[in-house]
Amino acid sequence: MLAKQASTTAPARPRSRSWLRRHRQQVQTVLTYLLLCAGAVVLMVPFFWMLSTSLKTLDEVNVWPIKWIPSKLMWTNYVDVFQRVPFARYMLNSLVLAAGGIIGSLISSSLAGFGFSRLRFPGRDALFFVNLTVLMLPTWAVIVPHFIMFNAIHWLDTYLPIIVPSFFGNAFYIFLFRQYFLGIPTELEDAARIDGCGTFRIFVQIFLPLSAPVIATVAIFAFFYYWNDLIYPLVYLRSQLNFPVSLGLRMFQQANMGIIDYPRMMAAAVLSLIPCVALFTVAQRLFIQGVVMTGVEK
Image 1 (tube, helix red, strand yellow):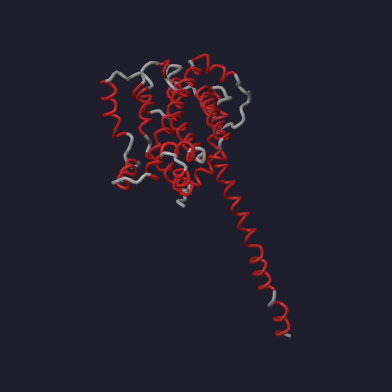
Image 2: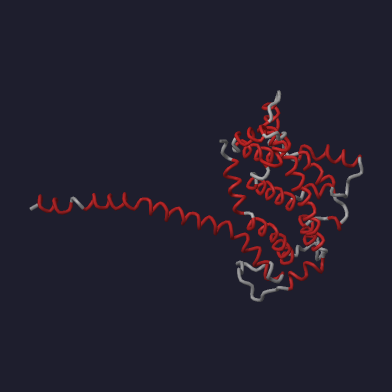
């Protein structure tokens, strides 16, 4: 009798194990998506708080527990942003800085990346190693020497100290271009040289047209950097009309006799995010492709 019961119940455990083996991939996929969704929610909470605060009154901001949905949507906070400070001028200034920084970064970093990837000259690898060590140099270490130099040539309170250094290359952008150019087949370069193309013509007519992903990647990185940069505008700029968005947001911390105007400051922060979100949305495919391809040396 006991033997008969054992024979009837024994196959149950193998069936459960076989079910797990058959559906292990599906279970892993479900768990992965659940973790990704949880992470996305955690990352989006600050944005939702910022958006909610931008539509509240100053009294509602100080209520505890936090009210995520305002009792009345204060769309006038966005209008006040432009009326209390020249915020449109701040955004225009940031666009000028970002445009100049992008142009300088693309020109200088692409040329340097091409040289490190395709040209052969003594000390090339040593120079590239020095370029990589610059990534470990903190920004604060060069602020004082730069300030003294730019003050001596009367560049303070202009955009030149912020834009001009971009034309001398960026170590990280040079690394991205070099890694991408190493993935372009050498047969294309050899065929172009047989046809009589010089080095610069090969760079302009062959490498650059094939480099849309890495160009988009560097452009997005540079735009985010110059759009969000606070330390260099804070050091070099004096006139309020020359302030970018990053400095313009600080104006709301000094309003109302020292009381931070959180609703209007958050409204200004939401407005400052629009160009970043728009640029990433447009160039998202090229950006992801560029990040993936620059990480693999073929």
